[in-house]
Image (cartoon, rainbow, N blue to C red):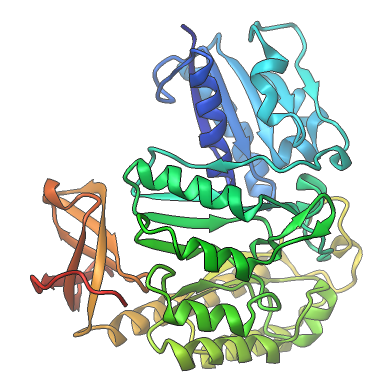
Length: 439
């Protein structure tokens, strides 16, 4: 029995796909082991959102060879689709599989015997036109369930359409079936993931269903306590979705909505499909119906043409906006996108300075959001991550709660009152001993 291990770089979608590929290996008789347990095969699932992700891939290959010098190393994922030849030349890499091939890698590679030269199996992205059901399993209290893949948008900074192909989705029937399978395993929380999750419903190039319809059907899956929407574009976050989440017992009051810039000038250069006014309207609609809802924001700083005035416009817009935390990315040039050819390149120093300013703002936003919730009562789903005798869990509205480790609490939901922030920036709570309430 050959031993195989997996390493995932990047997004929740990658984690769901890695887990599914892992189950394929196990079904074929391979033994899944840890990264350091001298595996015979390494499968590295890559991201290529930033240059840093590319560099991480090289580092992981190097580390793998330290632990198992004779292992067969396979690279899949977005970086593998975009730059298969470049990856095949990394010392130690034995096979590179593109987007259309990664779910067939056991059949394609068969014996996993090392050769003098790396094998490359990467079709043009146009051939990645089928949807592969995926969800993470056995890794944590929550499961990432892939409902959509690919993207039909053409943002000027993004390579994802080149790495994952056109927008396509699973069917509502299949997603509900997967949710029930996940529920049967004892998992209580599902995070819906996709490249452009709100664009759910396209099958064979035609829109046949909608994300709103999916949310309505998943809300009926009784054995799942919690659903979260991982990320949704502001132009696709419709009033009907917000209103439904507000009255749902299973969809949590938590949205992650990419902004990218608070300057309409930069949004236009980015070829985003909205302006800041629409974003502010979405936030206001959410907060009107769910005052304590958590709202996360993606922001890119240092995009070509972003002046100091543009950046300050973004900073002030976010400072005034009732959001809970930021994910901040310094702009990174990507080949085969429009942005690198645009005038007004921003220095690396200024990109990093602007990113640091927004990260400090994010910490202030997060602390303020946590403090707003002190004294309120929530249901906390505790996880099995334990550090220094402390376990953690999440409220419905994504406040991280710390508690003294108790094995009985793992994967259990408790009704608590939030009491104070600790030195680590986590919320402390006291159990109310009331029955778990619906939000």
